[in-house]
Image (cartoon, rainbow, N blue to C red; front, side, top):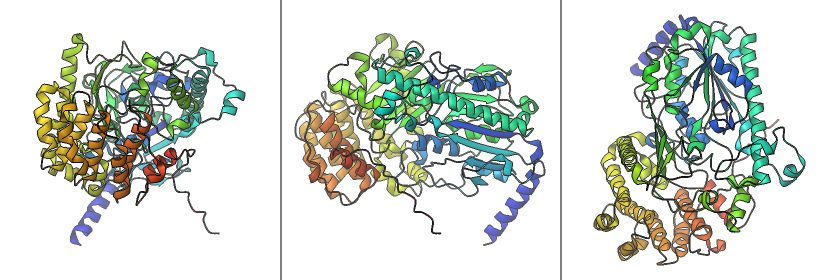
Length: 627
């Protein structure tokens, strides 16, 4: 009780003191376009669309040529923005969330600290967090939220506005629209990525998206105009950026540059240009990522950055251009997107991007119901199945190697894997080691399956710290897939027989990652089909199915029907769809045999697909208000 009273008095006195100086602090606005990588704006990428208002912002500010989302999908990326923390460390890495993560004690979403400092905070209007919001995040979060509702004209504000006009759904047009509606952008003028088939439908889709960028640019211009009308433009830092990459196939939801590399322009107000150690109109080459955005706003506002945040400011007092220019690394993660599971990590350092696949047998093109609403997605798969695509254009539907290395300058669309190139062996070794160190240091919770993690979401950070040694052991087992099999074999065999369920789980996954090499371990893996852990059975069935030792579908079906954990059922269903649609030897499945005890969004999506039903939204419709 006395603690609560003291905390209230302390908060009030601190807030009062800071509000007394509120007029002396800069305003900040975030203008966010959804699903938009830097590839779609001419200001960043030569084949992008013109955006005169964004370009005008850049003339009065700083362009960041190396800005990255840490994840290539909405809720995960926005959770990173809101918390300044890496998703796999705090449990916010899955889209859409099954269970909300609880932030660690003492940490709040960054805008709450701005409110404590006397700022008016408004959000219009998307939140989409995977963590339970801390108290006091927004003064208002709604479709009518605006800085104009603050208590007084001299109260500083932070305002965030998100714009869905560039969202993936803007490309969910019908065949009728494709045939009858013309685009402003000439489809013949656009340049497709190297991995796309050059078809009329793909060109139309890209041209239509360039039209959406024009709309976004107009919105940016309108926001700037409103600030000018209010006499606030030269008091306000204006950030424009995409909320992650996108949006044509192989971008949103995929960990390549197309999914992570976002546009970022910051307009610098005249009154506060002393807080930016750069010339107006300059371009920054140092790397910044979403974990840094919240800390940067706090720093501009003169508010201390909480130690629990992973990010570092890139603007504001104490931040020099030379220090920011020295930053050349960005970490990326990709886990579940709706019903589609994977476990992928990446490290961009300098011009190279290193990608580590923990389930490389899963092709990028594995069914995701929402993705395949786009006609271009569907056409691409149809062309592949018809045997009309080869090389770069077929990669999306094929299994991947355990690791990839791309030179993003020479190969901006990342189709030429350099991981086996002797000339790049030193770079590969360096980035592999750097990523391995990061995963263990966090530690990365995704070494456990999501079906395990949902039970610890009341304290994911604490769980990670308590199990850091075990996570390191699991990571070590996974990394056996990177060794020559003759060296890895005895250690994999020992892990498959371990008393520790999570080492057995990791070993089965590592065997699947190098399935053809690990055939000799089939007899050691077979007992795991009856393991006490249902998810270990799933991983064992995957391995044995990949090497054609058994039909995995009966085992996977039994897990779906036996488990009372809907996430575990979804994990098994991911494999069921893979073996039916994508494996080198297809295994049929009778959907009527799938009778899960409990369903969630992901299981419903998978079962609908297996039954041949058209896409259905699994979002609950809001009940109409009673009059």
